[in-house]
Length: 222
Picture 1: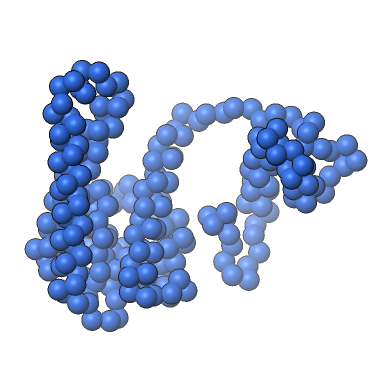
Picture 2 (picture 1 turned 135 degrees about the horizontal axis):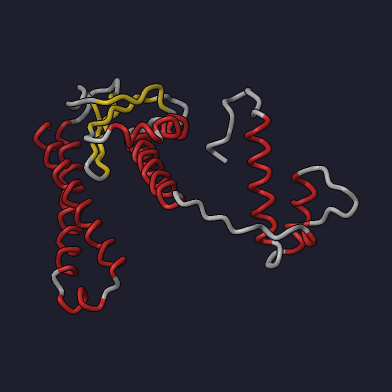
């Protein structure tokens, strides 16, 4: 709903509205066996219905799993993690949600960021999303994976407080990496774990290593 919400005082376009209603109707169909009365009520509130147009007799949704659904979900998770990072900075610096911010990204994979940049701009209320090789002056940063994100602020950044925050985050990342390393170093776990479980743990380790490297670089910059 946040993704399709139009700009303030601007109407939603017809195609987006139709797709949203279709999506909500599908949810109501799936929920109806468990919540029959409220879903029937919502079904009739959602759109104009004919005399016998009830959700209880509507066609059950067909299961369609696009081949790229896993990639789409992974991209969405990354986009929402960036939005959460920006919102955390807003909370830390007492910046209201209305104030537009700029976001600079230091990354080795700009193409990946660009795939969901427009969504991040909208949900995080950004005036600009750009790429940078170095940290901008007076910027607050956060790290996701191997990427560094910088939010330049008009106010003076407390370098000591920022260093303490990054050091705390680094300490946690190192502890997390060590715990994953310990698990992967357990021969019994490796012998009994399913291949997909092992792959997830190895990916966690790689992500933790990348985050540690980025945080250490951020400390040097401070």
